[in-house]
Image (cartoon, rainbow, N blue to C red):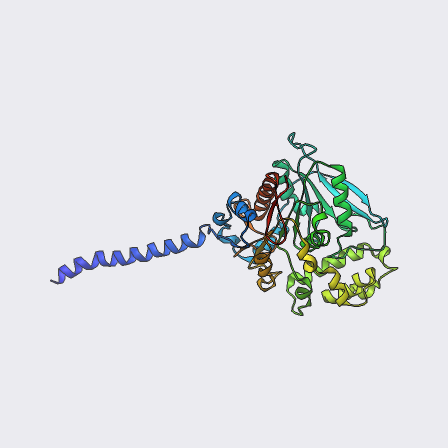
Length: 392
């Protein structure tokens, strides 16, 4: 009997050991495998959203970062420091009515299919970024046949500052002149706009302030911050906030000669919060009496009721720069022309997947633009109350 137990014990022990090894292998495999995260969609039912969900396959379009890209900080930092896609730009300087200068970086295309009536893609980078930072989207858009241009605010993107004025985050006056210039230059082309990070505030402000006369057919915001007055009123800052504030001061320092006649550079450079920076810089440049007046004129969602074109917003719920609580979900439930795609992972302006890493959000935004323009060509537009009317 003892020998029988001994004989049975051997396969039992082997089975236990084999089960443990198999479990470890499965755990390691599960950790290292690419995970598919289906985004959460927030929208109001309409003919437009039904078309977009189908054309963009949004309900079965996962964001699939590998294990080493599942961390929000890795996504955010890698997106900022990784080598940028090489794109050739042709810079054009455009003079504003007050003699200020903005710079337009046009993508030099070698694609023969890009024609004069091709869709114009207007890209608005973050306030401290430039055309090189959005090279990947420029390249993808060029491959799809879009004529692409990057908007650099006055004094940003290595451009000169000819007047003692920087564009505040929510002032769309310069952008208005740029859009009208592009429309006059390409009368038959439709204009699509894509903004990143802090550039989203400018785009939303523009679409709201000019409403149905915005001359823009569709907008996309990647990692937008909505009610920035609430966001920057928070006294608790992250390392990203301090880096952002430092980069703003670097731009300010580059134009100190032009701005010193209006603002006190010493006070501005010593500011330790966004409230202090905005008060010492933008309030002085625009003549605002206090911060309440400044935010009334620069809050991106101040005129959101008047936005009349389809707008896609892509946010990650682990964005280290913007809290999930800052996302106005009710906005997307009320307005049929707004669509929110919220991913569990992605960081701030990251959304990287694959090897080499590429932006999932960039691909989605181009597909969204195609879908909206296809919907428009069929002869339908949306109004703000959810009705659909024919434009034929």
